[in-house]
Length: 491
Image 1 (cartoon, rainbow, N blue to C red):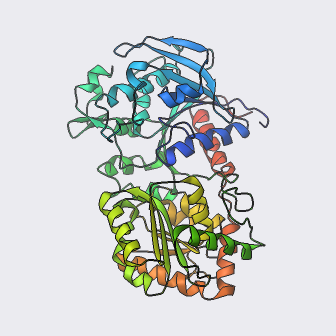
Image 2: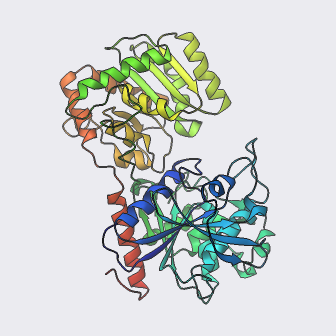
Image 3: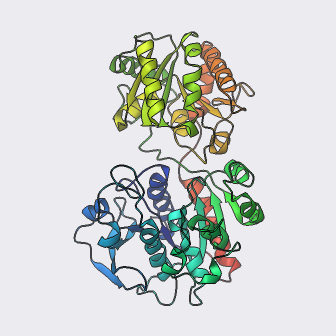
């Protein structure tokens, strides 16, 4: 860790890779605190004590007993994440000791006591941010993530002894944590909070709205997404509030783990390569074709997908234009799971076009890496995408992506048709299958021009998608927030 400064940050999250992860939030919650700590900031992570977390912190000392009115008894454990970032674990068997995932049971049904479970996480975080904290360590800023932590700013607002400023990060506004109104009192919020200017959302309690309304600063995971959510449809009913708080709203693109995603060192690849040795990339394509049962045709463009199979990801458009993709001709390789109809549709494609289309339902990390390296073109046509990670992995692996002009996709991919000198991928403007296929056609035509294609590949591989840049942006935001409240500046 570099030279320390005076800034203390409590990073509150419902998941953190590799111990508990359902999506990009888990990756961010591991990578951003590590990058902040490497820059010298004293950051601590607060995480629920799910069974998978407790297995990794066995024997951790108890830092404090938590007796919070209205909540089950809990303990605060002191531990460390795999990268040595300090960790506080909220250990409450009644709330977290169960099977299934962090938010629902084995059948995917939400836990009915989720308001209590994540109300406890929020209440514990708020406790650590004020004079009543049982710990000597006190944060200057509490950084909250998604609806599960949305009550933290509300608790702080109504606590006269609270000392920390709050930042609320939106990773995906589509998930808002909306519950019956009787939870307001049960969670210890004053009745005055239950109003339009507070936590009330169409007669119900919204955890996310609480965070958006009461937090000192708001961030999203890309500048484009910060603009998109200020109007319908991507505001999901909260666009008025977000537009009204636009001066407090900042977009900061996520980073990626450039050590894990490095084509020159990736242990999952059949052939490693970098921007100067791109010819070696073909070895991964050959092995991927063999592994998936595709015809080994080195000159046929291979289009890759690694994704949740949902309409939000625009993958129904891939199905709609699949016959036209096959006729280009091109191959298609899909890895993912999700919507049953989409899973079935991709399975039917593989049966209809043997040797030209392949699908693997599920997820396997080694295959995901091989597909990023072995594909020629990566497809990521999301209808909306707050940030996205795979488009950054793809550019880093010399696999130009085809993306929709939305959210973080727009912020991280430069269209090579509009700018063939500096372009890194292919961006389509309209939310239609025809617009998507137009971009696929442009990508395939560029692929057939070796000099142009090599330039696009190398442009993408030259981009810096690491976490130090985003960490500097968050550190600047924290420092500005502390100074605006009359607190200490960075040393």
